[in-house]
Image (spheres, rainbow, N blue to C red):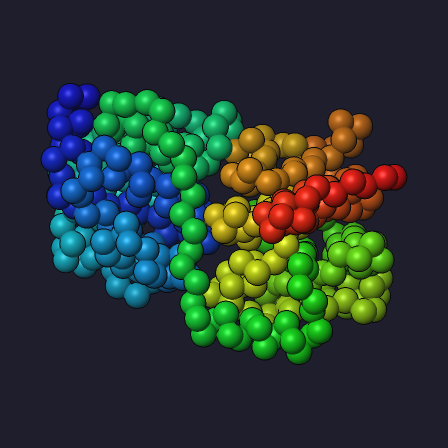
Length: 348
C-alpha cells in the first residue's frame, strides 16, 4: 500500500488540502503546499477552506486554486476541481464523507476517528500529545504519503494588499504611532488561556516609558478590553475593531514586533518574519511545543512551575517587558549593522 500511495502522490496532477477552521491553522497548514511541490513539482495544489482565510490564499503562486465551503458546498468544489489526492490535516466527518461520496481516489487522514474508514490511507499520530509542532504534523502527512523524511517546514508569508497598506498608514497617522512600534494583541479565538487585558495595559505603559511605542489590536468583539487597558494606560493607542485581516497583516508587516497570547496572529507575524513574544500555557493541549511561533526571532513565556499550567496571570509583566526589550534591541542592532553604523554597546 505504501509504494502505491507514493506512486499516486508522485503522479497526481491535482492534490487538495481540506482545512476549514481558523486563520492561524491555515498559516500552519500552508507549509504542506511547498512540501507537496518538493515531492511532485508538477502538481496543482488546491485548498478547500473557509472564506475567513482568503487573505492568506489570495495571490499565492504555489496555490493553483482555492474554494470556500461556506460559499459553496464541498461536494460541488470536489466535482469542479476533481483532486486525485486529498489531505485532511483536521478531519471533519462531513468533509470526509463528501470526499468518499465523490470518490476521490486517495484520501489521507487520521486513523484515530470512528469514521477513519472513510480515508483510503490513515495516519496514526495523536496530535493532542503535542510531540511535534502543528506545522510539522502537517508536513509529516506529506512525508507519510511520499515515503520520505526531512521535508522542511516553511511558513508561507501572506501577500500584502496595497489598499490595506494605505489604510494602515492612515490609521497609524490618526493615532499618532511613531515608527518601530510593537503590536500588543490581548485577544484570541477562545481556544487557549489568555493573559489579562490589564496586564497588557501595564505592559504597554512600561514599554512606552522605556521608549518602545505600542499599538493595541483586536476584533470589534474584543473592544471591551479597551476600557481595561485605558484604565491602566490612558495614553494607549487602540485599534480594536478597526482593521480587516488584510489590514492586520499590513500592520504586522510594518511593526517592530508582536506580543500576543496563543492565537493566529502569532503565526501571521511569524510568517511575515516579525519578532514575536508569545504567552502560552504549559498544558499539553496548549503547549508552545505544538502551537508556539515558528520564528527565528521569538521568545515564548509560560507560567512558572509553581503556578497552575494554565495560569497565565502568573507570568510577570516585567518578564514580558524584558523579552520585548531584548528582541527590540537585537533588531535595532541588526538594523544599524545593516546600514553600516556598527554595533551597539549597552550598559545596565
